[in-house]
Length: 223
Image 1 (cartoon, rainbow, N blue to C red):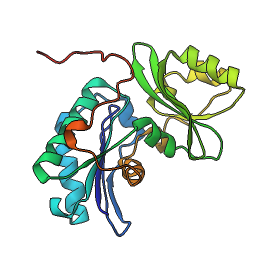
Image 2 (image 1 turned 135 degrees about the vertical axis):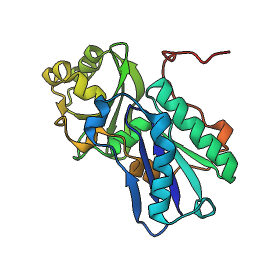
Image 3 (image 1 turned 90 degrees about the horizontal axis):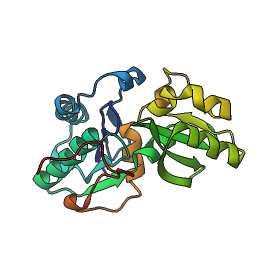
Image 4 (image 1 turned 180 degrees about the vertical axis):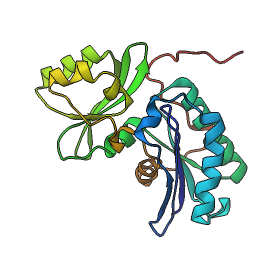
């Protein structure tokens, strides 16, 4: 099964083609891109054309489009999901929605608890807790202080990654949360991981795929 995958839940733009033979062709942003202004509208379609060209696949070769559905930034998710839906309709392809926090967690090394953290703005984090192949805490939004308190109460020492963990390192580490170094690639949601997780997700009609905002978005679409 050959998949095109993408994620725009953070300021970084990640795209990948995972071919049926297991070979991956990926645009994986550097962790430094998490601090740059978002440029999804300008970068996403050229990145898709690039990975499909390098993979030597056409739209008829794809089985589905895997897309990270958040939680994450409102504008980034809107662009990524609208693009995936539009391509799905144009190429008559189903979509496979994947939690961006689950994809982030899957890229965190180690065997213990993993705490993916995406900057939710407004002084909050989007968070979840994963251990092994299980989701221990489903996605939620909270202040970094509340996340730290929840970890203390659970008496765990998870390894955290994501742009939210970088921003609030000073609040999280005193609670026993281990934050990966700022340059660690684990901080980026990789589209390759989105593709791998999508292998276990059923096909979904494009119009049925919606963003997982967790809380009301910062901006509203014009009427």
